[in-house]
Image 1 (cartoon, rainbow, N blue to C red):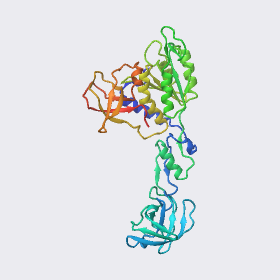
Image 2 (tube, rainbow, N blue to C red; image 1 turned 90 degrees about the vertical axis):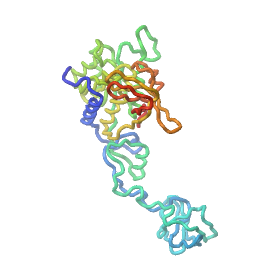
Image 3 (cartoon, rainbow, N blue to C red; image 1 turned 135 degrees about the vertical axis):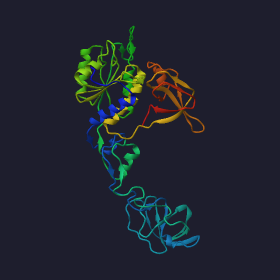
Image 4 (tube, rainbow, N blue to C red; image 1 turned 135 degrees about the horizontal axis):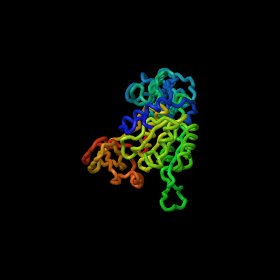
Length: 406
């Protein structure tokens, strides 16, 4: 188990993760538009029509010819009406106007709309105030031109982007298949919540943490039974999952202890891409491939699970789906000063707040140990402290990763 990189810098390990994910990109499928939300677009989308597809009114009022407007008030003759829906083939001659509603196509000859509140109507006579040419008109193609590339491969499909596709008449989109995910926690000391504890046992919190993180990212993970501290049973379970899932996440048993069997199993029956990253918390992180699966072995402490999932777990998931848009990261000013005496990149639990001047501040939690789950629950972000020893003063600008990233 020595023919793979160990002790990588954070950025080095992230580069390996991106390379592995790119080499195992998931296939393209074409689900109905309603099932595209949150997916990653696999191919560019070119507009099959213009938006708007025709000149139309932006307001309820009266469509008219700007050339007819003379002076402060002009009397026009009402010759018809055009509501939103099918075009009725109306055409305006000199001195004529037509009643129109928002979104309705402009009659032929019309180039301006006077809003309803600003006109006076008496039978078929309408008095219209002076207005600029093109007032309250939406022109064909002013939003999107036919043939224009409107969505790019690698973009995450937000509700607004799916809505844009719908406005173009598209009923489906080419997206990468979402990865299937198996989740394991490990250790003889773990007990299901609700069961009685015996001396030396603890409740399994990592399963709910990791399953919740995955679901929040739009995936549908499958929780497997807990892995016992038995190498043969670990082998059977992991090899079984690796045959059926795209991703296998494990929590715990990836360090160098007597009962940490996962690295040996993955090294014997798969390929380890790297083991151990110079980050805190989360140093024993392991990335491997076995059968059809990419396997990410997360450390066992819950805050390590949080930090390694938000960094490497999301990067692996995004890479498999070909996402090219970076996850949003914030910059915030540090509340109070901090000192870091170790060389690794550190992820500190923290809370974000905005002051009255619109300045975003990040307040680090004083609990730094990786087993302190309460501190993670009291926080809403991870603050990134760069490699090397650091002495940071209050007001220093820090990179911040909110737990919920789009």
